[in-house]
Amino acid sequence: MESPDVFTLLPLEIDPATTTISASQSTSNALETELAALNALHTNLLLVETPTGTPPPPVPVNPKRSAQIGKLRESGNAEYKKGQHGAAIKFYTLAIDMALARPAWEPSGLVREELSGLLSNRAQANMAMQNWAEGAVDAEASVEMKKVGNAKAWWRRGKCLLEMGRLDEAELWVKQGLEFEATEHDLINLKDEIEKRQRVKA
Image 1 (cartoon, rainbow, N blue to C red):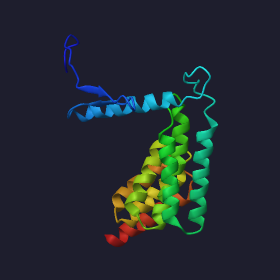
Image 2 (cartoon, rainbow, N blue to C red; image 1 turned 45 degrees about the horizontal axis):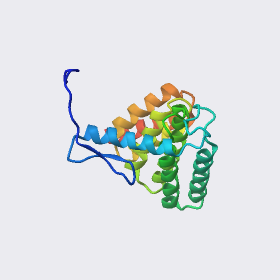
Image 3 (cartoon, rainbow, N blue to C red; image 1 turned 60 degrees about the vertical axis):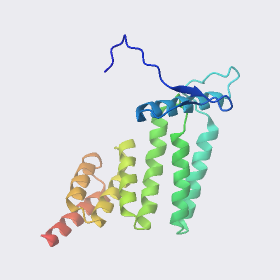
Image 4 (cartoon, rainbow, N blue to C red; image 1 turned 90 degrees about the vertical axis):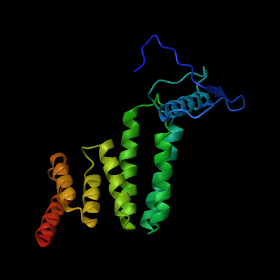
Protein backbone atom coordinates (compact mmCIF):
# COMPACT_ATOMS: atom_id res chain seq x y z
CA MET A 1 0.00 0.00 0.00
CA GLU A 2 1.27 3.46 -0.89
CA SER A 3 2.32 5.91 1.80
CA PRO A 4 -0.23 8.71 2.45
CA ASP A 5 2.51 11.16 1.38
CA VAL A 6 2.74 9.64 -2.12
CA PHE A 7 0.82 11.40 -4.90
CA THR A 8 -0.14 9.32 -7.94
CA LEU A 9 -1.27 11.15 -11.05
CA LEU A 10 -4.02 9.15 -12.73
CA PRO A 11 -4.53 9.36 -16.51
CA LEU A 12 -8.12 10.63 -16.39
CA GLU A 13 -10.07 12.62 -18.93
CA ILE A 14 -13.60 14.02 -19.09
CA ASP A 15 -15.81 13.79 -22.14
CA PRO A 16 -17.17 17.31 -22.76
CA ALA A 17 -20.29 15.98 -24.47
CA THR A 18 -21.37 13.38 -21.88
CA THR A 19 -19.35 14.69 -18.88
CA THR A 20 -18.30 11.12 -18.05
CA ILE A 21 -14.85 10.50 -16.62
CA SER A 22 -12.66 7.76 -18.09
CA ALA A 23 -9.05 6.63 -18.03
CA SER A 24 -7.13 7.87 -21.06
CA GLN A 25 -4.99 4.74 -21.10
CA SER A 26 -5.21 1.16 -19.85
CA THR A 27 -5.38 1.09 -16.05
CA SER A 28 -6.34 -1.34 -13.28
CA ASN A 29 -9.75 -2.97 -13.01
CA ALA A 30 -10.15 -1.34 -9.59
CA LEU A 31 -9.93 2.14 -11.13
CA GLU A 32 -12.38 1.19 -13.89
CA THR A 33 -14.86 -0.03 -11.24
CA GLU A 34 -14.51 3.19 -9.24
CA LEU A 35 -15.00 5.33 -12.34
CA ALA A 36 -18.10 3.35 -13.33
CA ALA A 37 -19.58 3.93 -9.86
CA LEU A 38 -18.69 7.65 -10.00
CA ASN A 39 -20.29 8.07 -13.43
CA ALA A 40 -23.42 6.18 -12.31
CA LEU A 41 -23.73 8.46 -9.27
CA HIS A 42 -23.28 11.54 -11.46
CA THR A 43 -26.01 10.31 -13.84
CA ASN A 44 -28.40 9.68 -10.94
CA LEU A 45 -27.73 13.14 -9.53
CA LEU A 46 -28.58 14.71 -12.89
CA LEU A 47 -31.92 12.85 -12.88
CA VAL A 48 -33.00 14.10 -9.43
CA GLU A 49 -36.43 15.70 -9.71
CA THR A 50 -36.48 17.74 -6.48
CA PRO A 51 -36.94 21.55 -6.70
CA THR A 52 -33.42 22.17 -5.36
CA GLY A 53 -31.76 19.51 -7.50
CA THR A 54 -30.35 17.78 -4.43
CA PRO A 55 -30.94 14.10 -3.51
CA PRO A 56 -34.13 13.60 -1.50
CA PRO A 57 -34.18 11.84 1.90
CA PRO A 58 -34.06 8.00 1.73
CA VAL A 59 -37.81 7.67 2.27
CA PRO A 60 -40.25 7.98 0.72
CA VAL A 61 -38.70 6.63 -2.48
CA ASN A 62 -39.56 7.81 -5.97
CA PRO A 63 -42.80 5.92 -6.75
CA LYS A 64 -42.11 5.83 -10.51
CA ARG A 65 -39.32 3.27 -10.31
CA SER A 66 -41.24 1.10 -7.82
CA ALA A 67 -44.26 1.10 -10.13
CA GLN A 68 -42.11 0.17 -13.16
CA ILE A 69 -40.46 -2.69 -11.28
CA GLY A 70 -43.86 -3.93 -10.09
CA LYS A 71 -45.24 -3.79 -13.64
CA LEU A 72 -42.28 -5.77 -15.02
CA ARG A 73 -42.69 -8.38 -12.26
CA GLU A 74 -46.39 -8.75 -13.06
CA SER A 75 -45.61 -9.10 -16.77
CA GLY A 76 -43.09 -11.82 -15.95
CA ASN A 77 -45.63 -13.63 -13.78
CA ALA A 78 -48.23 -13.43 -16.56
CA GLU A 79 -45.81 -14.87 -19.12
CA TYR A 80 -44.83 -17.65 -16.72
CA LYS A 81 -48.47 -18.63 -16.21
CA LYS A 82 -48.90 -18.81 -19.99
CA GLY A 83 -45.93 -21.18 -20.21
CA GLN A 84 -43.75 -18.56 -21.92
CA HIS A 85 -40.80 -19.10 -19.61
CA GLY A 86 -38.20 -17.43 -21.81
CA ALA A 87 -40.29 -14.25 -22.01
CA ALA A 88 -40.83 -14.39 -18.23
CA ILE A 89 -37.07 -14.53 -17.68
CA LYS A 90 -36.62 -11.42 -19.86
CA PHE A 91 -39.19 -9.45 -17.85
CA TYR A 92 -37.67 -10.57 -14.52
CA THR A 93 -34.21 -9.63 -15.78
CA LEU A 94 -35.38 -6.15 -16.77
CA ALA A 95 -36.95 -5.70 -13.33
CA ILE A 96 -33.77 -6.90 -11.62
CA ASP A 97 -31.65 -4.46 -13.63
CA MET A 98 -34.02 -1.62 -12.74
CA ALA A 99 -33.90 -2.51 -9.03
CA LEU A 100 -30.10 -2.66 -9.09
CA ALA A 101 -29.99 0.76 -10.76
CA ARG A 102 -31.76 2.49 -7.84
CA PRO A 103 -29.81 5.58 -6.70
CA ALA A 104 -27.37 4.98 -3.85
CA TRP A 105 -29.35 7.21 -1.47
CA GLU A 106 -32.46 5.01 -1.57
CA PRO A 107 -32.78 2.37 1.20
CA SER A 108 -30.70 -0.75 0.57
CA GLY A 109 -33.35 -2.80 2.42
CA LEU A 110 -35.86 -1.96 -0.30
CA VAL A 111 -33.46 -3.12 -3.02
CA ARG A 112 -32.76 -6.39 -1.18
CA GLU A 113 -36.49 -7.05 -0.74
CA GLU A 114 -37.23 -6.43 -4.41
CA LEU A 115 -34.28 -8.50 -5.62
CA SER A 116 -35.02 -11.49 -3.37
CA GLY A 117 -38.46 -11.94 -4.93
CA LEU A 118 -37.39 -11.23 -8.51
CA LEU A 119 -34.38 -13.56 -8.38
CA SER A 120 -36.50 -16.32 -6.85
CA ASN A 121 -39.09 -15.88 -9.62
CA ARG A 122 -36.41 -16.00 -12.30
CA ALA A 123 -35.00 -19.14 -10.69
CA GLN A 124 -38.43 -20.77 -11.01
CA ALA A 125 -38.67 -19.79 -14.68
CA ASN A 126 -35.19 -21.21 -15.31
CA MET A 127 -36.22 -24.43 -13.58
CA ALA A 128 -39.24 -24.70 -15.87
CA MET A 129 -36.79 -24.66 -18.79
CA GLN A 130 -34.49 -27.14 -17.00
CA ASN A 131 -31.77 -24.49 -16.77
CA TRP A 132 -30.69 -25.98 -13.45
CA ALA A 133 -27.38 -24.14 -13.14
CA GLU A 134 -28.94 -20.73 -13.83
CA GLY A 135 -31.80 -21.50 -11.46
CA ALA A 136 -29.39 -22.52 -8.72
CA VAL A 137 -27.42 -19.27 -9.08
CA ASP A 138 -30.55 -17.10 -8.99
CA ALA A 139 -32.00 -18.93 -5.99
CA GLU A 140 -28.73 -18.61 -4.07
CA ALA A 141 -28.56 -14.88 -4.84
CA SER A 142 -32.17 -14.55 -3.66
CA VAL A 143 -31.29 -16.19 -0.36
CA GLU A 144 -28.29 -13.89 0.01
CA MET A 145 -30.69 -10.96 -0.26
CA LYS A 146 -33.15 -12.45 2.25
CA LYS A 147 -32.49 -15.56 4.34
CA VAL A 148 -35.59 -15.60 6.56
CA GLY A 149 -39.06 -15.84 5.04
CA ASN A 150 -37.72 -16.95 1.68
CA ALA A 151 -38.46 -20.67 1.77
CA LYS A 152 -39.18 -20.90 -1.96
CA ALA A 153 -35.67 -19.75 -2.86
CA TRP A 154 -34.12 -22.21 -0.39
CA TRP A 155 -36.20 -25.01 -1.95
CA ARG A 156 -35.48 -23.95 -5.54
CA ARG A 157 -31.70 -24.04 -5.16
CA GLY A 158 -31.91 -27.39 -3.36
CA LYS A 159 -34.05 -28.81 -6.17
CA CYS A 160 -31.66 -27.51 -8.83
CA LEU A 161 -28.68 -29.08 -7.08
CA LEU A 162 -30.59 -32.35 -6.81
CA GLU A 163 -31.44 -32.30 -10.52
CA MET A 164 -27.77 -31.68 -11.34
CA GLY A 165 -26.81 -34.73 -9.27
CA ARG A 166 -24.89 -32.64 -6.72
CA LEU A 167 -26.43 -34.56 -3.83
CA ASP A 168 -23.97 -33.64 -1.07
CA GLU A 169 -24.29 -29.93 -1.85
CA ALA A 170 -28.07 -30.26 -2.04
CA GLU A 171 -28.20 -32.00 1.35
CA LEU A 172 -26.01 -29.35 2.98
CA TRP A 173 -28.03 -26.53 1.41
CA VAL A 174 -31.41 -27.91 2.49
CA LYS A 175 -30.18 -28.54 6.05
CA GLN A 176 -29.03 -24.93 6.19
CA GLY A 177 -32.39 -23.81 4.81
CA LEU A 178 -34.24 -25.76 7.51
CA GLU A 179 -32.35 -23.77 10.14
CA PHE A 180 -34.21 -20.70 8.87
CA GLU A 181 -37.44 -22.37 7.70
CA ALA A 182 -37.79 -25.31 10.10
CA THR A 183 -41.51 -25.94 9.46
CA GLU A 184 -41.47 -25.61 5.68
CA HIS A 185 -42.96 -28.86 4.33
CA ASP A 186 -41.48 -28.51 0.83
CA LEU A 187 -37.96 -28.28 2.27
CA ILE A 188 -38.57 -31.26 4.57
CA ASN A 189 -39.88 -33.31 1.64
CA LEU A 190 -36.91 -32.28 -0.49
CA LYS A 191 -34.54 -33.36 2.28
CA ASP A 192 -36.21 -36.80 2.31
CA GLU A 193 -35.96 -37.00 -1.49
CA ILE A 194 -32.25 -36.17 -1.40
CA GLU A 195 -31.56 -38.77 1.28
CA LYS A 196 -33.49 -41.38 -0.70
CA ARG A 197 -31.46 -40.58 -3.83
CA GLN A 198 -28.23 -40.84 -1.82
CA ARG A 199 -29.17 -44.30 -0.56
CA VAL A 200 -29.92 -45.46 -4.11
CA LYS A 201 -26.60 -44.06 -5.33
CA ALA A 202 -24.71 -45.76 -2.50
